[in-house]
Amino acid sequence: MLLSLLLATFFAVRSVFGCADHTGLQRGHLSPRHLARKRAEVSTTNPSYISADWAYDASYNWGAIRPEYATCQTGTQQSPIALSLTNGLSLHHHPTFENYDRDVVGNWTNWGYGPAYTLDHPKDDYTSLPKLKWDNQTAYLKGWHIHAPADHSVGGDRSKAELHLVHVNDKGLELAVLSIRLDPGSAPSPFFEQLPEMVPFVTGPGRSPTQDVAPDTKEEDKPKVVPDVSMNVALSLDGVDRFSEFWTYKGSLTSPPCREGIRWFVARTILFTSVDQMRAILGACTYSARQEQEVWLHEINSA
Image (cartoon, rainbow, N blue to C red; front, side, top):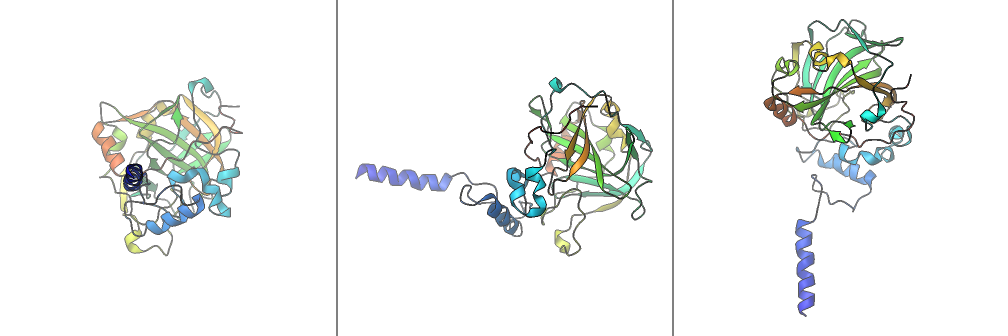
């Protein structure tokens, strides 16, 4: 009788303190496909969780959600990957920058998971934007956004956040990403000092940082946008010695549909912020780091 009572008490307490994820859904009772769908429903009633039909903390199975995401599971050059000094540093594909050293104007917002900035340009004309060149390739800076924590680890260490400067071809298709890891240091970063107050992450359905807001999005679910914000993006390059030391590899977008064909440049140097700047960045972020992928046909630092 005493044993039965003790067992009943144990399971009652376990049911109260059992580990559930932050959506309030108990783990282990739903398949990843149904969990992602359920999270999409929860996001409409729980403002603390941002989701479409996929979630960063379930990135291990994005390919099972819908056919369009199959590359997330079957791709051979998926990002991000773990990097290390044992990989060496790149002696090839050196990036150069044109038209970066000037003020640009754009929209300051939050892409649903962290701070983001999109440069103004004539419709469907990207060639007037700052240029990134390597080998015989040219790409144009469309904008930047932040992930927290960092997507790429280096030597097993993961920075507080990661800045992605997204470059597109002349048709607007993503072609290259400059990746800069962010950590708190002892002095303010000039790059972040020039920005307005951080925009909080939106409470509506999330979206990829490379996607525009859907036309049918409810007004209350649209992210706040601060237009006509002037900034010098080159200050981010100055903070990492203009990518004088870097890793490079063939990779993908880090959110569905995980399209490959993206040239990644990851700066060895970390861009340091002040403590207050980092707290402001993290306060405008929610978890957005995809699970690191196995190295396969990424050709890290290869010629």
